[in-house]
Length: 142
Image: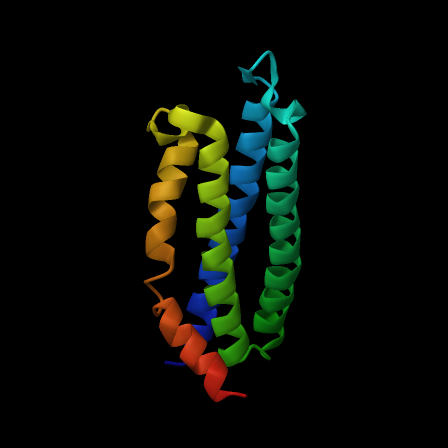
């Protein structure tokens, strides 16, 4: 039980890394892929989706860096670690889903890393304590 804050923080670190990589891959893809005569990245919806994903990546990075520093300092608590695990794994699923959508049909083919990232994201909300448990831990601290 004493290692749960560490484990949950590390799940958050992994989630942020996946989010950042998903955004990077999707930006690269949308700079090359054309639809209706123009690059996907030139379309407003694509730019807006990627702007949202990049913002989540940045907020996630700042939060998880704070959590890692607290681990190093020995001040990480169960509630904050639960917040990190819950929110970041939820965002991992959300961002990989949005990124996969921008790949279109190619995003569902395992030839593209985004497909594997999407498939792998779902279990993140389960292990290390299901996200519903994380919410209960957070709620009990209120």
